[in-house]
Structures are given as C-alpha cells and as structure tokens.
Image (cartoon, rainbow over all chains, first blue to last red; front, side, top):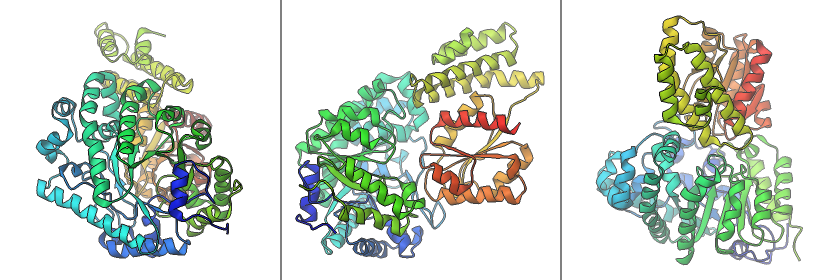
Length: 381
Length: 210
C-alpha cells in the first residue's frame, strides 16, 4: 500500500483541480448492480428491496477497502421533484417486471416525440411543454410523477447517508441529458438523424428552447440531494455518430453552456462520454481549467484525450466493462497501471470503470482495479 | 456510376425518389434499378471507410435505400425475378433488448445485397437455430449491448453445435461491448463494434461459406 498523506476528499478534489495527489483516486461508476450480484441478490430483488441493495453496496465498498468516493451511490437518479422528472419515466425496462429477474435495467428506445414536437417545444420551452404534454412520456398523473421524482430523491439521500456512515463521500446523484441526447433518445437515433438532415433549423430552435430548463433541473436536483457533481449524459453527439459540423452546431454550444453555468453555480460537471469522442476532445479545452471531469467509457481513446487535455481537465475512466466481466485480475492490473502511468502523469486522473460496473464483473477484477489505485503510483514527488 | 447511384451516395433523398419513379415510368428493369441502388450504398460504404462519412450518413442512406426499395421490390416480385441473395439470420440475443445497432447493421446488410432475417430482440438460442434451418442462411449475426449478452451468445453458438449446424454457419457477434476476448469466449468466428465493418466481415464470411 502507498502511504497516504491525503484524505479521500482531498485526493478527489486535487485530481479535479489538477494538483498533485498522493495516489490516483478510484471511484467506480454505479457499482450497485455488481455489489448486489456479489451478495446473491437478483436484479429484481435489488429493485424491490432497496434497503438490502444499499446494504450490499456498502458492504462490498468496505470489502474493497473503500472507494475514494461514490458516483451514483444507489440505484436511483436524483431529480428535482417536478414534472420534468418524466424524462426518466419511459426509458427503462425493469428486472422482474418487463424483463427477466436477473438482468440489469435496460434502456428501451422508442419514439415518443414527433417532428411536430420540435415546434411545440421551441414555442413553449421544456417546462411548459412537460406540463401540457407529460402524457406522451408517462400514463401517471402530474401528482404521481412529482411524487416519483421526490421518492427517487429521498432514496438518494438515504444512499448518501449510508456511505457517509462508513466515511465515503458521495459526489454524484443527478444526471441530465444534453439537448441532442434528449431529442435523439425520444425521437430515436434514426429519426433524429433524419431530422437533422431534413429540418436542422427546427431542431436547433427546440434545443435553444430547452437548454436553460435542463440547466436549472440539474442545479435543483443537485441542491435537493446536496451533492456537488452533476452528470451531463452525452453519447449521441460525438464523432462515432456525427461529423464535427453537426457536433459544432447541435452539441458543443449546449454542452459548453451547461457546463459553464453549472460551474458558475459551484457544481462540478461530470461530462459522461459514452462511445467514441476522440476527435471531439480538443473542443473541451475551451471549458474552464480544472473545473469539470471528462468521464470516458473506453471507446474514446483515453491516451489521446490525455494528450489533448493535459493540464486542463481531469479525466476519469476507463476500465472496459468487457475486461471487468471476462478479463483476469492480471489483465485489469496491467491496464490500470498503464492508465496510471500515462493518463495519471501530470495529475488530473480518477481511475474508474468505463461506464457502470457491469453486474457480472468478477469480484477479483474490481478488487484489482481498486487495489492498483491504492498500491501503484510512480509519479509521487 | 448512374445518376441514381450518385444521388444515393450524395444523400439526395428527394432526387432519389424522383429518379426511381421516373425510371419505372420509363419501363426500366427493376433488378437493374435495385443494382444501382446497391451501387450507391457501396459508395456510401467507401466514403465511410475513408472517414468522409459517419454513422449518420449510413443511417440517412439506409433510409433512402429503404424508401427506394419499397418502390422497386413489388415490381421485382411481380416479375418473379430470381433472388440470389446470401442469407443472414440477425438478432439481439436472449436477455438483451437493445435494437439500435442491430437495426443499423440490418439495413446496411440489405443495402449490400444480403437477405436479412431479423428475429428482433431478446431472442432465445433455439429460435436462431430454427431460422437457420428454415432459411439455410450461412451467416448468423448476434447483437448485444450488455455484458450478460456474452453468455446468451455462447449458448446460441452451443445450440448451433448441438443442432449440427456449426460447420455450415459462420457466426459474427456485434455491439459496443464486443472484443476479441468476447469472441473467443462466445466461440464466434468474427466480431465487430462498427456497423459498416460488420457488413464487410459478413461479405468475407459469405465468400468463405459459399
């Protein structure tokens, strides 16, 4: 073990602010599925018995010698208790309900918005649109939707308290879509891509109309649960899907505005990039230095990202889900060492899973990731 | 390259529709029209590989191709034109309900001249086996986005083996999570996390099995 000279909180803060650390901090993303599987719970049991699931998550964290923090301490996303929480209601199929008992929650993409909704949203903004058209997203009454949002927030508070009781700080509760992600999800990728081709001005007008409400939803949700990070969910706007001209017009201006506003309000944006964004990384140099986290899932070239963002933004990632599920502890350790050697050089790195820790990750593989962070740091001065 | 292929390659949606309708009105051979549509899709694929095009252009061209073939295919059927397409049985494996990657690959495969038998999502192993027996398709393309899909893919390959089909069917796995290690675990012949590359691999596999 490395002799530690910082608390976990100091270490995480230093990593974000690009200052020297005693070792690289390790924060697996959303490990609750994995933890529950390890404790013999099916995913359906996890969804039904949140107290037991929370206990499993805490126990595995302790067994691992404690993570340096929790990014998503539980199963629930935190929302501001208002109608716009409907955004998360239609999207997931639940184990033991819509899908088999021992499968993870899965996202079911279906077309909820029509082309005509761009105009409505452009005219009304997101909040007013949600108040009038919430039934497109959910069969529940407004009171039930607000109560559901409140319930998720209450659950997150309990998760935060449970980890606090073992001395582990929680950082992340709310997650907010970028406008591009929102429309891509609720129009579907194919229809949205055709919309960009056929009606680009209409799409942009709708994006302009929702971005401020989305920013405020993130702030209110984070305040509600008292957590300092806000995840900006980004998957569909990067180079894997679209040329840079699309990114420059339909993703980057909104991403920048959201991140900058959250920073100005004292929050740390965690920019969660699923899929390949390698060619988009240089744009992030225009964001304020040392104020947000670039979270990569292993599809973006993290080593190139480090070259582009060195001494500017903290990078988090990116042990691939497949490696955690099918790999060996030796492979995980070797990869984590490589990450610490290269991405961890010159500060600004948090070791993490590439996206969520998969439910079927091997115990010894997650342990190897955590242990490598705690035992290997060649850059200490 | 004819105007039709060029219009598809350049993603000119309205022009493609007008050209197809005009050619049909002029009595053009529908099988030649289909061949030209496929040529346009080939060019899209080339531009994608040259990094001039992205997944978005594959999606747009796929839609244009679909719309064009919707007009042409009934005429082909009416002519009783022989179909010599190579079959691909495609589906997202049991326990996984993601269809995005599968649908894109399916459209591109059709654009490349394959006959696609899409079984949808959450498909149990036996259903794949039954479809392979029914269609005699030489390629099985399995899709998945979550790590539990690996076990379902493995079970599907084992079901193929049990049914005595494994030697005659090439198996490719696809999805954001697949790696060489996953391919080896599953017992597949090929893998890809890129839709256009997946189609290229299917072409190679088709060459090996026919």
